[in-house]
Length: 360
Image (cartoon, rainbow, N blue to C red; front, side, top):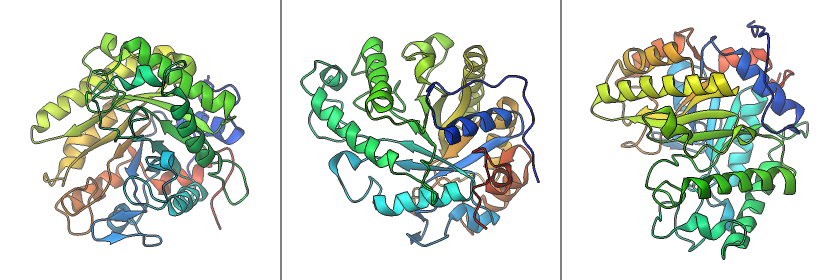
């Protein structure tokens, strides 16, 4: 059995009314600091390379024998009462997979590629200054609130077999320093973005009484603390700070950026009582056979972010975790076996929600 090390001081979630299970998860993730980085995979149990909607299936598990310790999901299309999310996963099935991950003692995180509330186009529509129009007093504010209502109802209904709300690492407006989403830096001022963030979190907490969320603030590119903090909404609205960073052909650039940026946010986190994370990363098709142990693992070991999640295994030409027979399979097994990385077999025995929810 593993045990969580005792820390002299633990800091509370930014939501003073967070549910007990949500608080205990945040405390547990603080205690795990230094014990290893929690490994996650987006849509891990929903589909993979060559399969879709198969019970108890996972490319990560097929390679290692073990599930990841963190599961990423997307709320996108919930705003339209869609039956399926943006990647085709039925929300009813997604809800089941979230519950199963929780019952196994692992962690769930949600992003939201929310469509543009100003014109109904996709999250990638940057043709107008949408953020200003959905703030209180703006012409599209009521539409945005209606969409929030739908997301809040869904997240409130993510419950265990015993009926308690499942804690969620909620990651809205991700990659906000980019230029490809309607909420990005090219379509709104820093003040407008901070107003949007604060309104959103306040609305979910105060109006919708949603207290099972830990809030993840996740940027794209930045090169200094000043850049990172320019759109930061304040400590009362954030629990985790991080950034999305993918590897491309220039692996040395990836290593440099990952190392530098994890160092920057590590300093910020210490001063502000936050945890660091790497909410999206990976190398599409993982063409480098030893990428896991020679590129990613040493940087995670150096900076020890709370968690790191690779993106989804969506197609035979679009995947970020290995599957049986993939070129990096053997190296991923070594990565899994490292004490510096935490998969479900290591996190499940810890009772990170303050109790053992593991099914017998």
